[in-house]
Image (cartoon, rainbow, N blue to C red):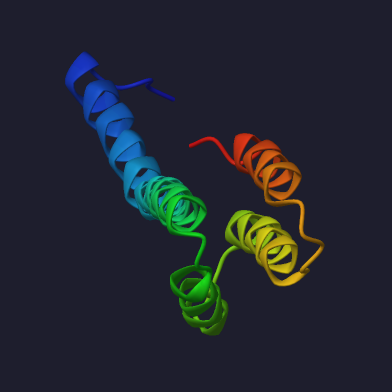
Length: 114
């Protein structure tokens, strides 16, 4: 039994590496795209919440949450949208203390840093 030449061994190793890359590359690409999508969702949510606090108007936040809920969100996106719903609930509760409400919303906003 012969072990083969160095060229044959190099070819075998290269073919094995090519197969492994072909198998796992789509997984890593999909994972990277999901992380990018989650980061973009968080950045957009932060901007919308800050604008809602400044304008004291939650309509754009409500629209964003409703539309984002209809998408096929990943588990991390669902967690972010749950925090957004909590912020929306704080906007919708009319307790008269706007400063306290804004502090609570800012605290929730800190939990979803991109």
